[in-house]
Length: 174
Image (cartoon, rainbow, N blue to C red; front, side, top):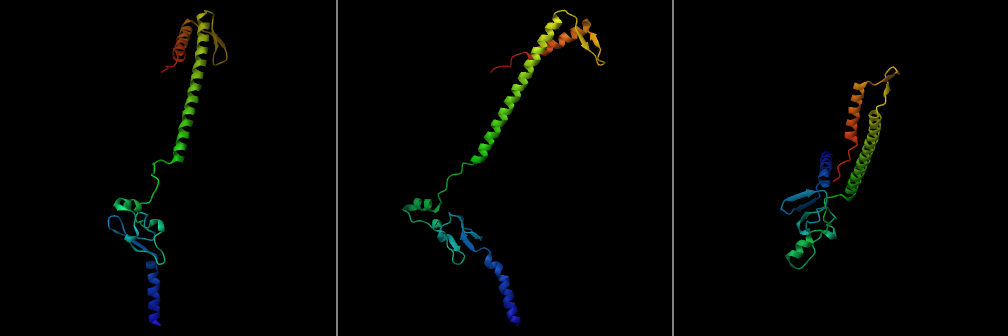
């Protein structure tokens, strides 16, 4: 009974070893590689040292007899498309984001330009009213109407000239 238990314990302990590292091969540098997955396609069948029972390398991975050493080297490598390093979906999303950002910037610039044009027209109209010499009045914080004296008029005209100089100039065209 004791020998049966020892045998059963040895069997249970050996199960993880049977499940792990079922493939063994030599890589291109001659180092042994252990894995639970089949070797990559560039490893020829003669370099595979051990495979799981009942499994062999896929037919595409087996070396094909070709004429000359250059043909053998080319046959050992799988034919894969060369990666461009760019994901076309991500590139398209990036282009769309850049286009959306450019459109938003253009809309914002147009909005600013329209605001400046409106400020320019208002400032020109107000300045022409001040230049006419008629009496100007404004409403104070208490809601009372008060007329501007000469100093207030001069200050307001100076402010209007600054607005005209800033907002009425044409943007530089390149």
